[in-house]
Image 1 (tube, one colour):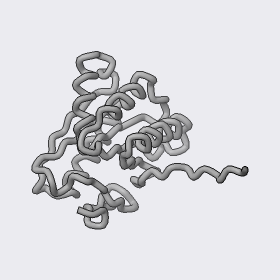
Image 2 (image 1 turned 120 degrees about the vertical axis):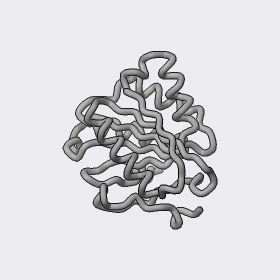
Image 3 (image 1 turned 135 degrees about the vertical axis):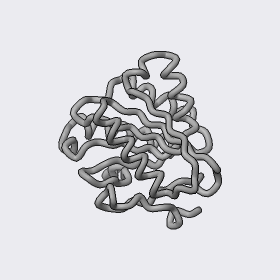
Length: 177
């Protein structure tokens, strides 16, 4: 399936539709989604987004969904299970509070599963509330996740206000020699 044939994440929950690029759509009978949330509000946002995404992509496909509380990833056995699930997932959704810096332990977890990717890796999606748009913590987290996505060759989508957009790396100015 080419990117132009990929389903579109519709504007019933985003103002601007985004093509959902996945190398695996159409090749697998069951898809997996890993959701990591920061608090009850972000869990609700992630569940709504996941429900809409699976509906938009087509109800003929089966989805599994692993949901993890961000603080539970501090527990070694939970962290190990979440790492294994994220490494083989088709979609990883991080539902975050943009007012709070991403803890170093969670950054390390993202780097850990990023180093264990299977089958091209997941599509990484960071969900922030519209109110988080101007928060420095959100910008820092988005930049960190963008760097991980670039390093691992992942597609990285994130919220920008009420829309979901694909992360584009900042162009570096040409060096002068």
